[in-house]
Length: 358
Image (cartoon, rainbow, N blue to C red):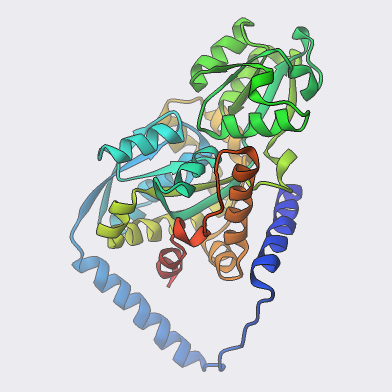
């Protein structure tokens, strides 16, 4: 994971410098200890008064059944962080990002977590990002050695299962492109994650593109016959695999305060998750929520580069997070999934993220 962060940070800084030229900062006048304490106390009291006077709300929250999707929202729920913000959450499980966005469009879901692949829908104006989640490495292109596959080039003419519109499709296209192939050069079968796992185990697929924990299920069942052809790290220098919390643009316009309160709770959860001593408890909560085996959930802890709330805000302020979204968008443009460049600030609510940390 250190290699993942180092690679992504290098790419991020390249984009940041290209976009901004240089960044300067000036130190604020040094305050006395009593002044700092007084200011902090006043801010805390104002936040507490604001929350106490706010109307209690219920939010329908979409997630996918994996560690990366649930780690913060489950911790925020179980630790009472949503309750502190006057929020009751109704967690609803989905299998992928596009179906989450479809549920938002019909009004049954307020906010949701999406993986990298569905971000093209945000870039194309279908939804807005209100909170950065993480940079992930949970996607894989996997194949069966017994079907004559050793490299990406061997995928030509093979039957490959993938989930359209998701990070599954994104990493498959990148893997094929690395061997000068496209989806037209293979027998690409659109399937949901559970169908892909079943088809791989039965041998009706030669290869697949999946995300964790489905990748773990395939590996466990097929063992040494499985070869991993690519993961997100394979393409970190050209396209960041960013995951986010999103909502509809109309919802953002009409419910800004709800999003602010929700994000504040997520920030507290980020910091709770950052303590290694809490990993087992969080994994147990996630296993219970989505009906997965505890060991399977616990094994997914390395699927992303996790940031504390302060680290995230620092990287928003210095342009790193924006550069990661720009890198992600560039990857979609290169693959033809997005037609033209869109300013990142058009679909990412950086001001809200900063305000939530104030």
